[in-house]
Image (tube, rainbow, N blue to C red; front, side, top):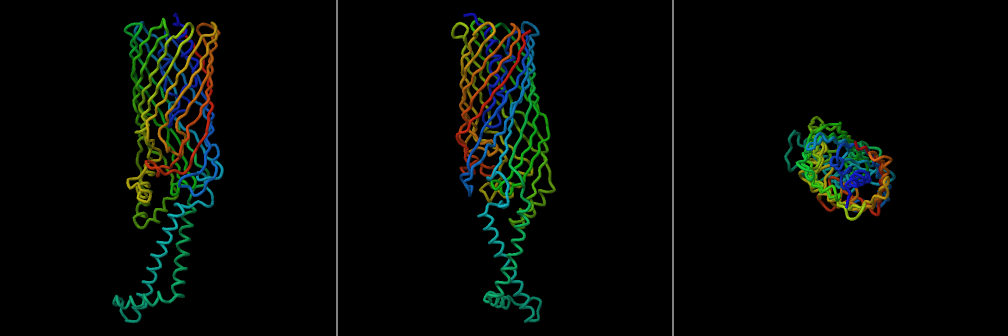
Length: 494
């Protein structure tokens, strides 16, 4: 079964949309198949995803309105060059965009600001309003009683018993109490109106972009084994805007992550028998740390004063403070397999694990505010902007076949576990199933152009805000969603 040439003809080129849509922020799938091609090799490609992610308000949301498609289209390029320096040494550079997010809410729902939004959930705010009015009415009654007792006794510090008598008298006077209560209520409501006026305008949206350059060195002690490893330079940048009643105090929060870089590493090993197109490879990629000073804006910060003197102090301290935020992109393992199964035909499979369970993002000021209000939502130690509860597992399997000397194609099926459910409102799907087809045309033995398309059935998910993470509460449900991915790749063997 001579399939040596078929190996490069199929797996290197007819799967341009591998990865493309996966759990959490995973995008490219971080394949190193280009580095494992024989001799010298170059490829460049682009993948595009067109998702439809619609849902409905649910759970703790007080309304049940439709949520329009919030999944924006996005594309990302990739490129690779591999050089066989000697019979036993190889070198490669791989470029991709491994992680990212691109979403924006629209319409009339809890993720879009409108005039009915309040700084805290209406029930919570009503309770705070009632407590504040009651406390201030009592303070006004005591103040008036003390003033009257002082006038009656001619003493600046009248006996408490006398003050208590005047307090009783004032409370028995319905006209006086109504006047005091109305005056306090007007002041409190004016204060709440002022606080509510600080809420953001517009819609919730997120855009996160990463770039990877992997520099890999390989050692081939013989024709069957390849041991490789190298360094990885990664950049990350992004913007997040939270809007709508779902985010209460964070309605109006903006965060901008200036592009910053971090360094990691990868290592792996491969075994192959070229004559029968047998290949197995396992690759580990390390986590990468990014220490960034995120530009944060929270116009509702003054609303912490609603929580009492401690809240006002916390607001002042947060406003004047600054600090770095650590973002750690996750470690991962890829396992790739292929084997010839008959003349001109190979079967292939890949499995990927990504450690999303240990991933979270808590911008500095976002975190400080979460600590100040965490007690109200059962999170006394605060909470994260984004967090996932499970690791991601994904798998793809398929068959590729050489049709003619110039044409080859494949079919595949894929599965992704997701990264937990409920999941963040900034990416409300849980895994997928997909089917795909790919085709390659080789005008010459050393060049090819390939295209592919995949159709995704996205997993249903419940969406929760950061304040709800690690619990069962949620604000929306997303069901029966789909996505279409397609890609194009060119390659040159030399």
